[in-house]
Image 1 (cartoon, rainbow over the protein chains, first blue to last red):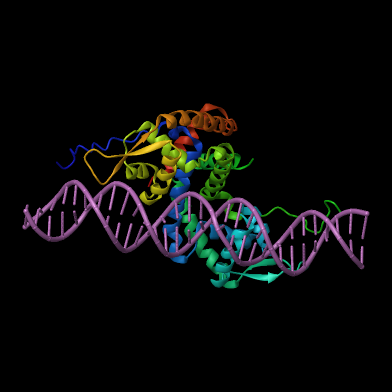
Image 2: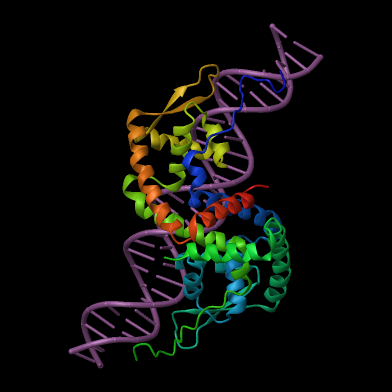
Length: 152
Length: 152
DNA sequence: CCTAAACAGTTTAGCACTACACCAAATTCA
DNA sequence: TGAATTTGGTGTAGTGCTAAACTGTTTAGG
């Protein structure tokens, strides 16, 4: 009675779910998320934290809310995230020059090094996934299409 | 001093983030999620709940964990979800025939009607988004590609 | 049979994200 | 200048998802 159980385990019918871009997006994103975690969890970095680091590295001096707006997050979510990244000595808050309310975010020297090894791992993971696509054209097409679906 | 502020608001440089499929997926999915909420929040249905309903509607009698596995969720997340859907008189738990541990999930007659109007709204929203793609071929290609990126 | 392992559902705790209210600082405008 | 509005950072629910432990049930193996 090994594989002849009465639990026939017939495949589930996904119905219209199968044709919904939103649902397929969710599944794909879940897969990327878990793969990312496997690759970077030992470094204590989640996809969200990585995005923040990437933005600050390329745009030093941005305020917390500027980073949040760029990433489409809520400002309040930045507090705990930046707290954590500061504790990890990856970036630091400095008082903004002409606005006593806001902080400007900068990478630490240790954070710059950290970002390099982090980027290597992420790009590695990225290329493994991109290898499933057919050629460079398809990757570009996918990025363009996802961008189209991201706005408005 | 309307739009000539010293806050030049120069566009943020996303660096390698721009070329990461994972990041673009996240943005696109966030957009779909918020649009879905706009369309269905008055009905009290989130994307996750909709997926559960869609599965049960096409596969009556599945157990909670079977639905969870199909959707890639954790079993424990089903408890509150099914509780809610039962309270909304959309589906119901019935004791499984040969297993006193598990419940079988079925749509209520009111739930079937509800699912119809719900599906209409979702498909409407879906077609608005799909209209951004160029032709039916691109939609099929996108669904296939996302599926490729969802597994393993 | 009877014990050990696996399993369905549940509970709980932890984590990330969202939305809303709050305070201090800055900006606007009269 | 001074009052009203806006803005940056923060705190606080409330929600969704994940992982682990627990209960009752079923299955497997001696």
